[in-house]
Image (cartoon, rainbow over all chains, first blue to last red; front, side):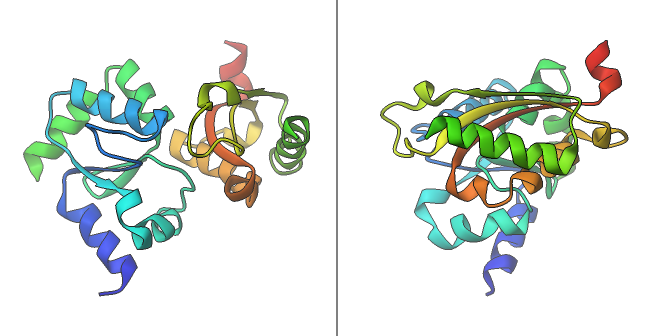
Length: 106
Length: 90
């Protein structure tokens, strides 16, 4: 399978997936850590991909999404943004319901 | 080194987005001991008419696009606050 197809399949087969440096338990970057903590606070299940464990994904997802940094958070197959946008949605009180809806309709 | 980077970021953003307000803050100290230290962490506060009618995702993409290769070479992490002149004045 082509790497772009592989990424596309990962993104679309999980209602919520975060591409991050490290894991939610052992994040290896402050931004990935904050993103994972914020997702946890919403109390919904989410998938994660540790980009340090898959070099091909690490190198290609930036062009897949036209987004040059990590973390990248995908909800219902769409990029919603990185850490700043996620925290902003959380602060505005919009994130939890967005994630819950994505989980329900999956 | 850091001053050069800030100048590079500033000139790239000025050229592409013609901002009415631009602040670039170096936050490298937050990343001491981090595996990527060397390439910096910056906060950009930018106000531009080009953000009108754009969602937050698209605004961030405009900033990333303006920075181009700097995102790979000189910038490890970037926090973006992108506002329109109307939003900024409120």
